[in-house]
Length: 243
Image 1 (cartoon, rainbow, N blue to C red):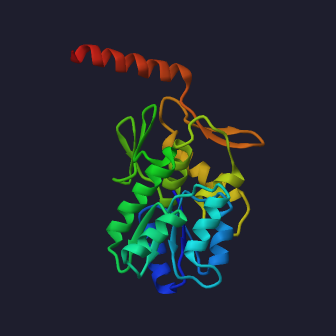
Image 2: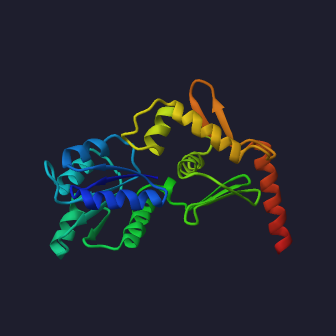
């Protein structure tokens, strides 16, 4: 999941970046309102953590601008002011949730998950399944045919992105925007290299490949139709046996 943090307190922004990265999020940070608005308008993010007091343009103005433009990016608003009228002002501007400083990091994580569940159906699942491949986000665990797979944080994030878009061809540019940091300065061959490593772990030694190359376009994750049919039969048989 790609998170945009807009926070002018650099110490707090760095803490949020490090904490969220350890939780397998991809994180970009902006330290002023105009920079935050520009990134939020790029369409590269799944959720935004937005401070109210910012130089250049405050968080309320950013939220109003995004909503006026029809941008439904989920917004978790941060502020040092927790009076009722401040909260109502945040919600009126278009925030999905409101968290007063200081806060516990665990509460921020819980509110981020709630924001994304409300704002984007494609990210509401913490457990993703594709054939015999299972990704459990909360446990930070991936298994295939019951075998635990050892992935780096970036490989985990890339696999999660592929699994959230089954059968959809994802370009290298789109993968870079969604899985790597906004400021990542490299060519798309970093995607190819990570895909190669991911295939070694996810596909090699198993009965069928899941990660496919669409030449000249990008990559997709797809379960073979015959396998999908067999899985449905097995599920139906198991249900009948349980009755």
